[in-house]
Length: 285
Ligand SMILES: NC(=O)c1ccc[n+]([C@@H]2O[C@H](COP(=O)([O-])OP(=O)(O)OC[C@H]3O[C@@H](n4cnc5c(N)ncnc54)[C@H](OP(=O)(O)O)[C@@H]3O)[C@@H](O)[C@H]2O)c1
Image (cartoon, rainbow, N blue to C red; front, side, top):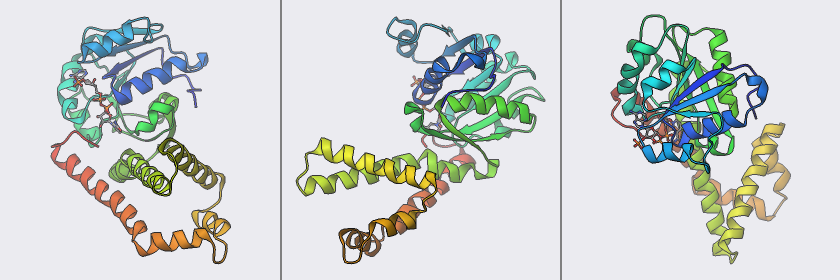
C-alpha cells in the first residue's frame, strides 16, 4: 500500500536501521500526490549513510545529513526510528529546532508520548507508532496514537506516512503494550510457527526449502481467508473431515497445549512491554 494523502513536503528520518530504512524505501516509492519533495536522513552508523549516498542506494530524493540537528532544521515531519534507550538523548539534541508547526513521529517501543513531549517545547505535536518488521515487505501492522498536542489532522498525516509500510490502526496509548506483544513481537511468533511446521515437513522427508515455502504460503492463505471474512473455526471446519488428517493434527495441537502456549507468548510479551515502558531499561521489542 502506498501513501495516498499529502504527507508533507520535507520529511526527516533519524535512524535508518530496520524500521527507518523500510519507511524511507516506502516513501521513495510512494505516489507523486503525497507531495513529498525531499527526505532528510541521519544515522549514527556512517556505513548505513554511505549506502544511501552511493549509486547502489536510494540517492534520488534523499538528502544525507551530517547530524540529527540538520534533519530537524530541514523537516516538517520528523520520524524518530532509533532504539528506545536513545530516544531521550536524540530528542533533547533536536529540541531547539522542533517547533509547534512540526510533527514528531516516534516508532520507539515503550516510550510514552508524554515522555517525548517532556523533552520538547510546550505544544509540540508528538505521534507514537508501534510498527512491526513486516515493514521490510510493506506488510507492517502499525498502531498509532497521538500525544497531548497533536490533532486529528496530524494523525492523518502520520497515517499517510505509515501507510507506505503497511496498514495502520488508531489505538489508545494504553493499548500499545498489548499491540507490542501481539504485533511488534507477534510477527516473530508466526515465524516460529512457520519454522516448526516446515520442520515437520522435513521430518517427513521434504527438502527444507520446499517445506519452508509451503509452510509460509499456507500461513499466508490462512491469513488471507481470515481477512476475507472466514473465521479461524470456519477454516478448521472446512478442512477437517470426519476421521481425516486435519482433525488428527488439530487434536495433537489441542492435547499439547499449543493454543495456550501461543496466548502465553502474547501475554508474556505484553507484560514485558509494560516492564520496559515503566523502567526504560531495555531496548529490544
Ligand atoms: N525492529 C522491529 O521489529 C521494531 C518493531 C517495532 C518498533 N521498533 C522500534 O523501532 C525503532 C528502531 O528499531 P530498529 O529495529 O529499526 O533499530 P536499528 O535497526 O538498530 O536502527 C536504529 C538506527 O539508529 C541508529 N542510531 C543510534 N543512535 C543514534 C543517534 N543518536 N542518532 C541517529 N541515529 C542513531 C543506529 O545506529 P547504531 O546501530 O550504530 O546504534 C541504527 O542504525 C526502535 O525504537 C524500536 O523500538 C522496532
